[in-house]
Image 1 (spheres, one colour):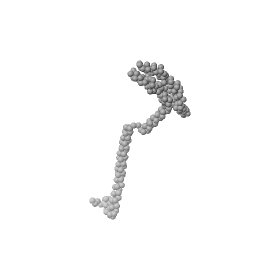
Image 2 (cartoon, rainbow, N blue to C red):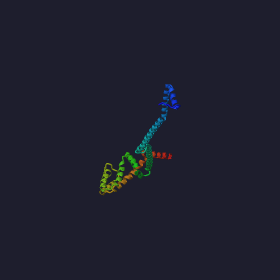
Image 3 (cartoon, rainbow, N blue to C red):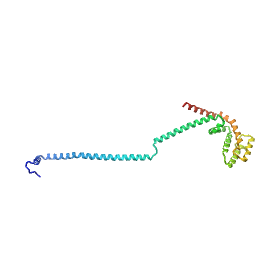
Image 4 (cartoon, one colour):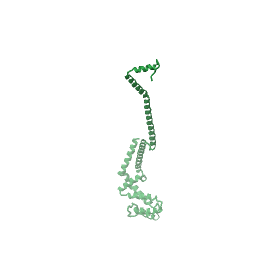
Length: 246
């Protein structure tokens, strides 16, 4: 549409544009297009920024969900490995201390055996060591008989008491027994009579004679034996080592 009003500014502008070369008009259109692109770039940047924020927020939500899941899973497992290792270490320390106490106790017992024959018989390890020594002298039946009598005294059933009494008599006391102990004829006959009404005391005399024989004869030789001397040396050296570390 053309302007017909004389002196109109628009008419002058239109006439001026018409007078311009075609190349100038094309360059003007190109500038307009570029200007439009520049004007739309902030909007594009805004969109890109918004998209990045959305992606970051999504990652953060996934990370938070992962942490929550990890915490949940960890609550279902036993205590951490460090705590387990600490417990194992504590257990080993306790075992080591227990072993040290056992060594100290055994060392003390070994030295107590020489104090009296009673001390030796009260100690399980002492009885074992003494029994091993008696085997070297082929006289372990004396200690076995004494131990059998100690067990016999603990029997409460009368039926078992009678059967045990006959078995012990046949194995250790009667003449030509497989493991006959060294007691006099009178003591053997008293023990035989006691079997008719077996009680927990029916072997008392025979047991006492056997004990006296071991105390007066075998026990002193045991204390002088090489095996016991080695045990006392080891016990003494452990005691000296303990004192040097305190």
